[in-house]
Length: 176
Image (cartoon, rainbow, N blue to C red; front, side, top):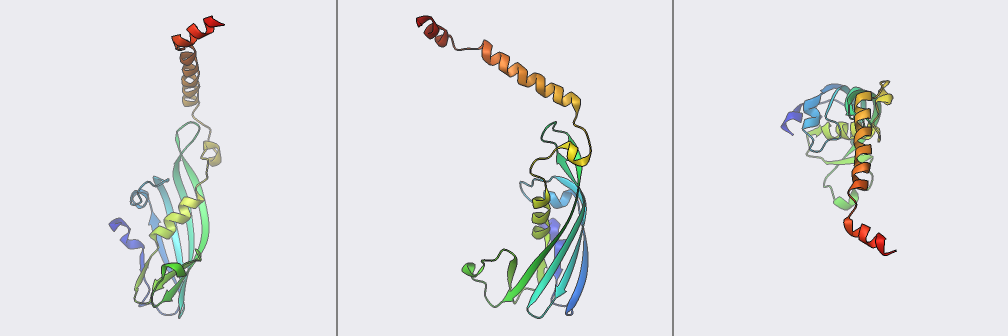
C-alpha cells in the first residue's frame, strides 16, 4: 500500500470548513489492491473535506474511464463512469467493535491525524462496475472473429462428447 501514500489526507492542521483535494487514479492504484476487479483505468477523484468540530464530511466525485473485459467476446473496452458519494467520519476516544453498526459512518480515534481515502475510492469505483460487462455498454461491437471462434469451440465440444461415449453404455443398451 506504499503506492497509495498520496491518498492520505492530513486533517489536523486544517481550519474548520471545506477543503478540496484532487487525486489521479491509474493502473498503479488498482495494482495496489489484491484481486481487484478493475485492472486499469484513467480517473480523476475530487474529494471535498468539510471539517467540523466533531466530525468530517467527505464528498467524493470520481470521473473517468475504466478498462474492463467483455464477458461475451473477451476483448478489452473503455467503460466511462461518473459517481458521487458521501462519507461521514466521526471522532471517538476509543473505538469498540460492537459500536460500529452504521456502514455510512466511519469512527476514528481522536488521536488520528490523517484519513486514508484510497480504500473508500476503490470501493466506490468497484461498486460502480456493472455486474455484466459487455462492449455494447461502451457503444462498441463485440469482436466477431472471437465470437465465431468461441462458437466453433462450443460446437466442437458437443461433437466430441457424443463421439466419446463410454463403451460400457453401449453394452448396456444392447441388453434392452
